[in-house]
Amino acid sequence: MKPLEINLEKIARLAKQREDENYRFRVFLKGQDDDQIDFMVHKMDKEIRSQIDCDKCGNCCIHLNPSVTDEEIKKLSRLEHLSPLDFVAKYVDFNDRDRSKYLKDLPCKYLKDKKCSIYMNRPEDCKSYPHTQKEHFIHRTYSMIDNYGICPIVFNLFEQLKMELNFKK
Image 1 (cartoon, rainbow, N blue to C red):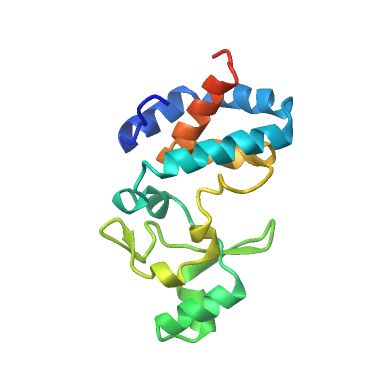
Image 2: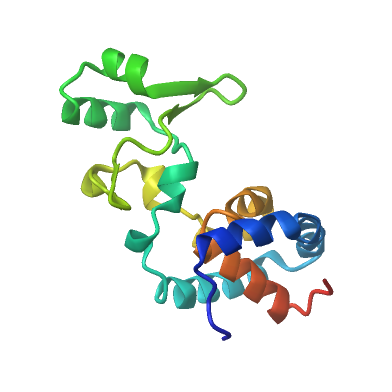
């Protein structure tokens, strides 16, 4: 495996430059075997994660709004010493299209020195980020393209996957 790119400014710049390429790669992936791609992605994810320390990054907490469940809202409201209704009014927004709830502050109010100050109580959406370890990678490529310019894990995984599959840039 070639050295990983971890420079966030370079990753953001390359994401803009490679946007068309990444959408072509998305179409290319749709023609691949779902199980084989998952196997490759999960293997790469494990290798890449072992070399990237998310505690030294925090870029996801700067750029993304995690979704939250009602149970997570209750837990977070207790941490803030607020009622769930007051917590929602102050810290939660809604997506009318899919009826989801998400934390509205950017950067995340719980980000302190590139680390999550509520790490043990963080929402599931945060725990599972960048979602590269989940099944059916091929069906989540839009969100992967969105995360490509934010997360070094996604960036490096996408680039390695392009190489492994001999994708013609």
